Image 1 (tube, rainbow, N blue to C red):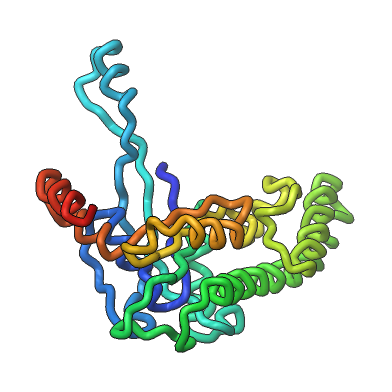
Image 2 (cartoon, rainbow, N blue to C red; image 1 turned 30 degrees about the horizontal axis):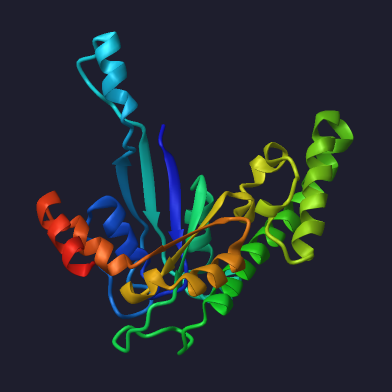
Length: 254
């Protein structure tokens, strides 16, 4: 069974473009909100140089690398937790993934509209994180009465109830559960969105890749989570080329 990562963010930030680069697919990446309606799924093998050595040692005839699934999910908009945009349908797709990769737009392109009419990475992240947190709070609100009943007749449910109440308090403080020390196993049955591991991808212009000051500033916004900086458009173009042509393009770009 492969692990899965959901690629999320506001509309028109480069989610589908990144998905194409990662999976070498060619899904629609269009200049309008909700170009992605149903989630696109791509499965790739995880490169591991140890496989060939192990195959030689054990005489294996077939190499099967670990698989990783990427899920390109429809864009979140403000109010998604209440049903705006694709609302609950979108959130259901997120709950099925093992981790979340949030794509944040930094690049400037007059031909690609921003849903809020301006480029503001901090505000965009706040919108996404708030909607995920609100969705988790709704899930917890519905779960607590059920867990209280179950805990009265099944003592093993008591630690789960306590963890869920702690999660509620943590989310009320404005922080995602991924930054808490609450036991994830106790929260597992609720499939809470902000409890998943997070990775942040800043989709920048090619020229901004060498801007150390910008990278430092944006990395601070998501610390202690990991921040990755790339030009998704260029990466998607490279994915369509042969290794030789891709190397030539990289050399030309510098």
